[in-house]
View: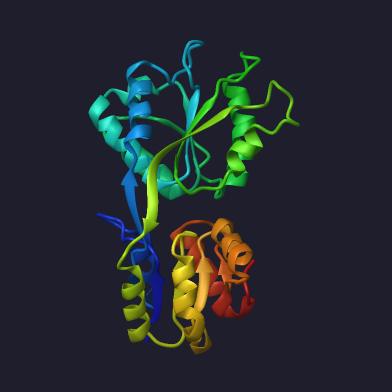
Length: 282
């Protein structure tokens, strides 16, 4: 008998690493319950178009930005749409670093057609680690410049500010401090159908199921519907510390496990560790 794994996300196409890993294990049944709906923001995307067309991102002294940061696949999707219009992005951005967190976002960037980007930081796993990596790596990349050029960070309407705060920390020496400009390129909201869809899935899955939480968005609905079901043995795992801390701080709720890595393998390790007797995760 397989254990239901309720993945609160839209299934990726054409392949979804979570679906493939859990299904192949033979122990789990992955069930997707989409939570988020996204809309791209024209104001931010117009800025990106202008920067790419005018050479605003590059290694030269006259470029406005010396590199870019991505921490979500949605930001990559928004960027990919602009790249499809502009073309020649591999040539435009070939001499600047592109920083990303986690393998999924890195894969999404590498899949942009006809581009070859300098992608760094994919093993960081979270924003805090990535910020520390950027401080050292960017300093070497622009070691010939006393004042480092700003970085452009493509973000959604809802995000943490750990990366900008770390890179612009006033306590840093001026030669290490990096200006980060956040540019909103997409908005996120809860799908209107999420509550009904999740209620239906809860009704047909039983004790022992896992719920995988990928984002703070939708957590209020999630906890309200799980309030009674929790007693039936539903267990919660978060994709990383951001969502775990949100559940703790906003709702006083402690998930059973926080994945050590934001990846299918990290989730599998967290779930199997818990089931193997390691107890509540960090």
